[in-house]
Length: 507
Image (tube, rainbow, N blue to C red; front, top):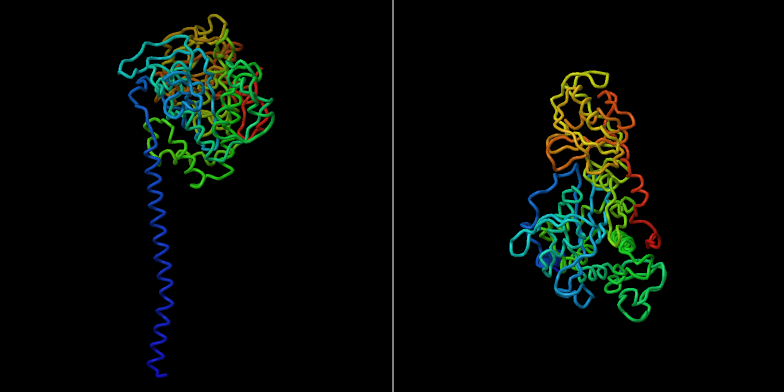
């Protein structure tokens, strides 16, 4: 063979080696294009699934933003509209809701708490927008779940429920999500079922007390995995367990949501887990305009990935029976909402907002003077309204006189809405935090509470009543530890990592 022949063979061999590499590169690029196209198609599909409710129904009178974190109102709808009719939704064509909780995701993105609001809670429903554009008059002493049915539309009135939650809590709701029966059922199937537990055998008659017989057994006592219709039946059961109350059902729903979160986290926050779940959820989900795209929903979901199961808490708004209805217990509920607004965890720790546990108290402002006695010193040019939050008469007037002597301007005194306050609270509106800190430094163990109202307001508690003197600004600071009532609430909270068979019934 000639040299030229050898070169020809060698040249052909080189081209032959490059061709498979070039082919592999083309295949890889083609796969990437297909994957990208598939992802684009899936996002397009998710966006097409999403339904929003109009922001024009949200009240213009809203609480101010809290110290940190974000608040998401989750509403469970049992409407019979659409594909819900085959799953046992509510009667008729009016959207109804028996489940609602406010989820607070703390500013550190490592803690979360879901506050369940019993459906029979007696509340004030503020003015709400009807489908024809008119606004209703306020409803006093109404059942909480009636807010969702205002206007009697098939899809319900999530904006009215949001308005009602903001009214009763003073907490600004950042997002609202409505999940109906069909969406809930599909989500549980998308994750391959959810581990649950029953304290006793459950029969068809427990799910539907209008039956004239016990019927067949639908759940056996103990742990099991449920999905689809069976998962829906589990969270709807109210009769046959404990005292047959909605409170007991709430406890099982909290256990279920905790178990669902654990299942998703165990599978991993990755596209393989989240995309099928997102597809199932968005098909029967209604959201506010702030969550109106797949990008926004998936971004929100990913923001939860670092929250530890033990730091995911479930509680029920402090309550008591009032006849056949439920009344809110004050001041425990006020304390809970104040902690959420201040971005404090249930055990009183700061999670990114104001009033951090262990953080130094506010330094005396230049205008507060350097006095060391109580009731004396230079003026601060801070205006305050003083309210008596105890049963001790004359307390607001006494505190007002001391504050005036210290140079504060007192705009008025009155009795607080409730008289069971333990700690003195200093409520403040936008731009008034520095002034509020200066005021709080004068009251032993005082707590700062941001509100939607303007100005600065002091609500006196029994800590002041037991020793009604002002503190030196250098010797006192707003309390950074657990607020009164928080420890009891924390003790009753459920964590997402709790045993699925514990705490499943009330009564």
